[in-house]
Length: 96
Image (cartoon, rainbow, N blue to C red; front, top):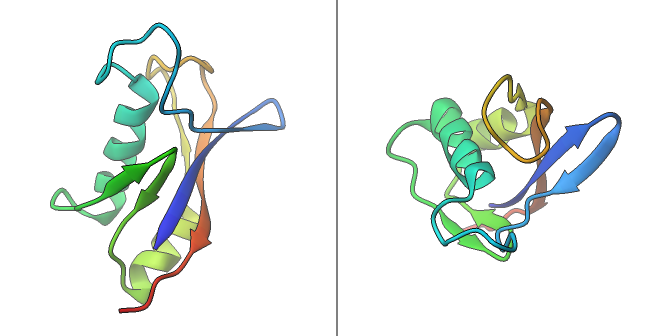
């Protein structure tokens, strides 16, 4: 399935931007938070591919329902939006 991470703050949605200006590659804290969240819900062995702000992950029907229900409070994780919520838009379901 292809999913798009979205951060919600003060009623506004902000899509994940993998190319934040001024950050060296690998230091994007939003990326780290997204991966931590997905692995927390789907397991530490989750394999994924990131392409232009979307994530391609293998899935089962159970995984699809789990991803649809994710609405995590970022709490004090140091992301650019401050404290907000992370949810995932399911962009496409790929059948194999």
